[in-house]
Length: 106
Length: 114
Image (cartoon, rainbow over all chains, first blue to last red):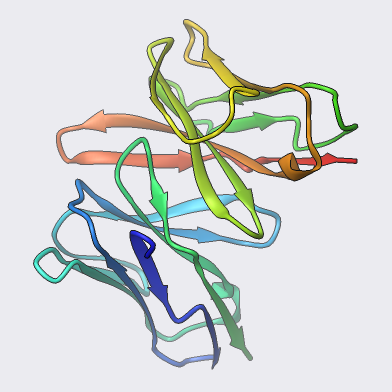
């Protein structure tokens, strides 16, 4: 069993919909990261969480340490949000989930 | 502030050759980590360097090696290339702070072994 499990693996939605991507993990962590990867490969760090909730624009990330679970929410989704979203654990030695491929149709 | 710079962006090599990839971290960042991304295995940790010392190592064969220079720039080397080494190689630099360590990624080097 992987240390980090993401769901769903693929998600297709219409523009404007509220999106939720989930991440469950089985080990103790110092931090959890949400990353975004567009076609072409570059990865952008969206959030780093060790507790609670963070918000940046239309993106919200939450983490429940007791339940070992984190969620990434996108409000008012837009086609430019189409990307692979990756959950990762740790600091300098990251352990990654398999990613969620999100497609937002206009 | 410049981001993490990886060179080259694309590379084609032949089986048996060796390759060196370069990563320039964000100014002031002393930690550089390397990752391999393949369709089958996803993202996997290769190694991490901090102040010119390898601090962490992933589960890769000895053909994969790296080093870090005094200016924090890092290189990774893969010797005796195999077809399975074809991948996107990403580096990330980070700055350890009291609030946590956030990783900043480069655009990656896409290596194709033929």
